[in-house]
Amino acid sequence: MKRLHCPPGPTALRWLLAAGAAALPLAALAHTDGAEAAGFLSGLAHPVSGLDHVLAMVAVGLWGAVLGAPALWILPVAFPVMMAFGGLLGLAGLPVPGVEVGIALSGIVLGAAVLAQLRPGLVVATLLVAVFAVFHGHAHGTELPAGASGLLYSLGFVIATGLLHGVGILIGEARRWGFGQRLIRTAGGGVAAAGVFFLWRALA
Image 1 (spheres, helix red, strand yellow):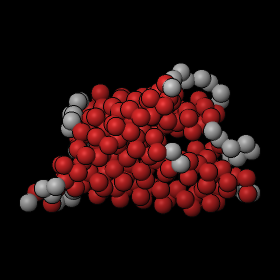
Image 2 (cartoon, helix red, strand yellow):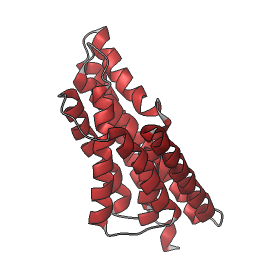
Image 3 (cartoon, helix red, strand yellow):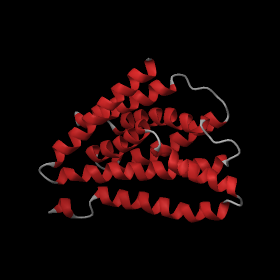
């Protein structure tokens, strides 16, 4: 019965959704012209424009659900923070070697971690997620549309990333039912397999 009291997964998901909802009005107040609005909307849409990004971000939420608290909320916070840092590097034109390979490896490693139900220490899991987040952020930063507001673009893709983590956490809540572990492992295996394809494409 204790497992039904204040479950961490939905709580973390509500927190992510609330953060996104709170940020949207701030973004609306912040932009003053169409270019800036386009910057925010472009950033909000960009994480879902590439399957490699989507799968890795969902996998972060899935892995957090596998690990449980406090990783359940630390990983989905660490990823957007470090992704924003990587985005700043991209905006500044500072190179990060092997970005596409790093993005592909994030899918392979995170998906495999979910598939195998790996449970490393919190520090190791957080560092791993943070490193991969820099690659994703750099890719976003270098693709900033010309003339758009970099700040609002970054805000948009950070919010979208948090929501994708929330999707992963929500899927991870299936572990409460008999079919849940199989579903989660299958999802992890699918992410890892897609990561192998992305790696092949990046190296081709």
